[in-house]
Image 1 (tube, one colour):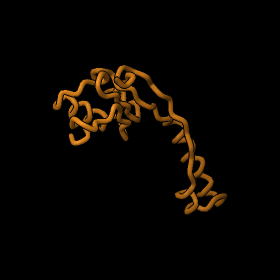
Image 2 (cartoon, rainbow, N blue to C red; image 1 turned 90 degrees about the vertical axis):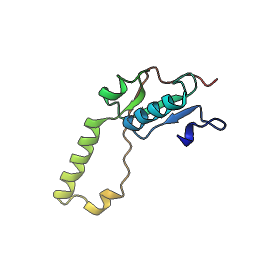
Image 3 (cartoon, rainbow, N blue to C red; image 1 turned 120 degrees about the vertical axis):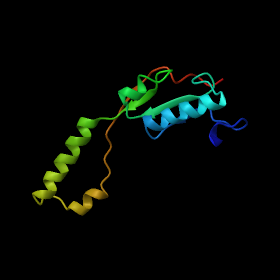
Image 4 (cartoon, one colour; image 1 turned 90 degrees about the horizontal axis):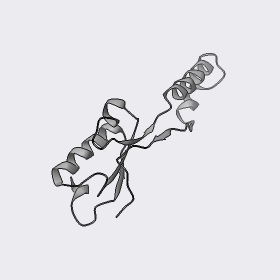
Length: 110
């Protein structure tokens, strides 16, 4: 709610996940902030029951679930077979690209 107070209000918010974006929609409605006219919102996860059913529909980043599972499985098998150190996996970064799913919750700032 503090984020949405008049004055230094942002023009856009990227939420940690779609559920948090849904909470932002609710808070914006309570204080009369219109999405996307006054605030653009982007989520993460593309949770269909949330993203497609919010009004306006939520722009979100679709996570590459299959690729994430494949990466984890490959590395787990390597660790089990002794090809890699299991402790090293925790510190090993992985970059997997998500897909931006553009819906109606984003507009140019006024």
